[in-house]
Image (cartoon, rainbow, N blue to C red; front, side, top):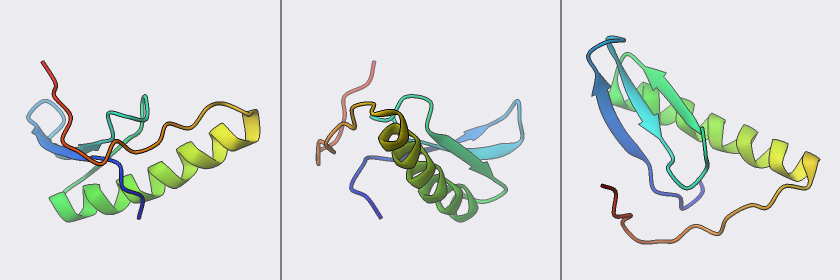
Length: 70
């Protein structure tokens, strides 16, 4: 697993947990449990990185610290 921060939260509107990787724009997954969302997020990170490599897009280095979001 990569060292990107993952934020997991409950989406009342969708009725699922969302796992989001803020450092990788648009990279997220959902699941019925936190564990399922996190598992899916690992797969989403791999796909995000694979696609970025394929198109020559920059891949951010993991910050390795808690992000400050407002």
